[in-house]
Length: 195
Image (cartoon, rainbow, N blue to C red; front, side, top):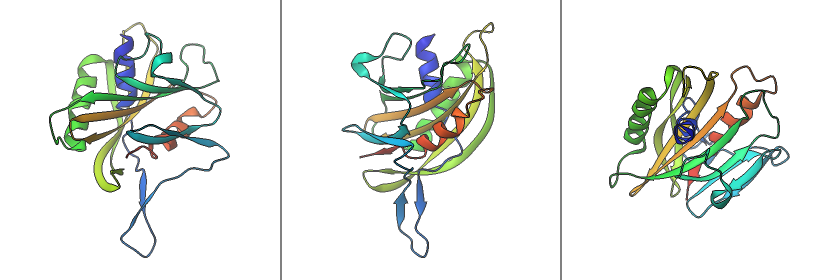
C-alpha cells in the first residue's frame, strides 16, 4: 500500500512544463525557481528544486512507507491531520528507448487500476530536458485513495525516461491543505530534469 502511494505521488505532474522557451529565440531555457524559497537537489541522474522548508530524505533514510524505487523524498514540515505533503522521485527499469510520453501513459493506467476513486483532474503536455535535449512528456493531476476508508489525496506526477530507466516525480498532498503546499510542489515538479 505504501509503495502504491509513492508510485501515485510520482505520477501526478500533469499540466506543467519544466522548461520554457526564451523570448525571441528557439532556445529552451531550464525552469528555475527563486533560491530564497527553493533549494536544488542534485543527483547523478537528475536535478530538481524543492521548497527550502522541506526535509530531504535520501534513499538510505526512507522508511517503508515509500516505494523501494524511491531515490529521494522531500517532506513538508507542516503536518496535516491525515497526510503530510511530500515530493518523491523514483527510478524504475523500462524497455530500451521508451519515450517519456509512453512511459507516462503506462504509469497513469497503473494508477487507475491501483487507486480507489481515481479521478483525473488535469492533464497537460509538458516539456523537460533529458541530457540537455528537450523532450515531451505528460504532467497529470489526480485524486485517489489507496483504501476506500482512507482520506482523499491529490497527486501530481511527471515522467521522464533515459535509456532503460524511467523516472517518476510525484507530489502528493491533502487537497484541502490550508498551507498552499500544492502550488509549491507543482512548481518543484516543473524543475525536474535528467542529466
